Image (cartoon, protein in one colour):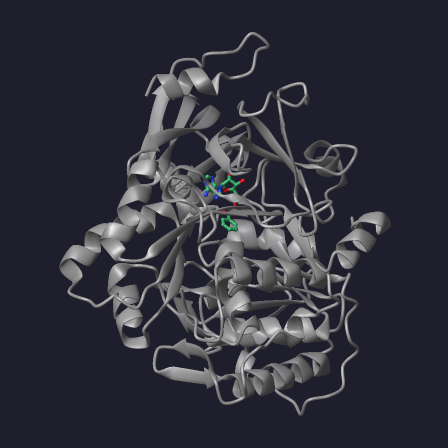
Length: 516
Ligand code: OOB
């Protein structure tokens, strides 16, 4: 589903959509350093040349505009080169997270009718080649690193060729939704809308060619990819330092060595960094800005960021579906620590509504609905779900409960969607419940969020047993066997004789949560 003509015309007229294509958004001079990964330094000239050669190589394999490719790479030079190659080809990366496993990947490959699947050899102790080999019907596999029995990504190489230029209004890539029902939905992002997303984000974060950005979170996630993330930094000619993980032992030496100026974290990692910095003995003085988002940053923690890390804080409330809210660099400190920012674009439209869909009084809590120049109009191949996820006039129902301040800033305060936000990683209750129901000892299951100081929330699986009670270890092993990503495994298990029900006969998750 694309943007209606009248809206597209408006977004062009207002200068948001410029006709830019993502494949050409490299803002540095050829000799400037674009990427740093371990001991490797890649200049803009090299990045540009490598992307062109890879695009030509992919074209020679028969991959062309409109084809979908599942990209399952960690933070690496190949991730960036491949992304630019696909953008130039008009082929569309479907960005899976490194933590995803067989259950998620099988679904993504099938649902997107992917023509190729790109993996690392090993990452974080996991062999992705074995994962690829374990899936029947997997399309062509390309491996970054040692290919084993598959094809090496490095062998996909050809003299650059003239390629048809993609339409700016066409889909450039797919992001995954945190999932409100069952498996993740695919979010189509166009060249027009995503180019605007990253350009406006770069501006609001104050980036320029002197920026050194540490990509600590997975770059397959919208936040580290384009808010402003890797793409935003490259578009203004800055340098991206790719961290293998966001842990202080990996990240701090990189900040010190490369004089990193900006990075982005989820709240649980910000808390961890604020503790670790006391004992790390590392010089983080180059850091000027820390963006925090993905889950709610508590006010008390927000107040500690600048004293602990010596940098400014920018809260980011965003979603892969589009809408991004940022606190501004010149906002008063009180707003920066107590709100989740205000919309990025003057043309982001916001509605805060009650259960009947009617606007609440100004300042009251309600569900956030939004429409705008970089917010999707429909998920990919999900007609039925789209009918529920959008209003008739195209507003997306975020599932988040917010309060709007007179300044236009939003305070996020809960949600109506059945998703548990585990330190920024979104766990769809329905998806996990479906896996639990397949367990031979589980008669019924409900997954509920439990407040947690570090992660914000953890998960608790409530189950009704079929005879013998299952154990947490048994459940975890069973879900792993089914190929479910580790972050979705329940943190806690409670076996009950029966569930509490609501008046209409639904399992009362509210009451279950209250029992913990
Ligand atoms: C980001 O994107 P997603 O798609 O993984 O998750 C979106 C959801 C939001 O609907 C909201 O429920 C929650 O994550 N969220 C926050 C938040 N930022 C995201 N809840 C409270 N406070 C915040 N600051 O998480 C994402 C995408 C782009 C930039 C930043 C985060």
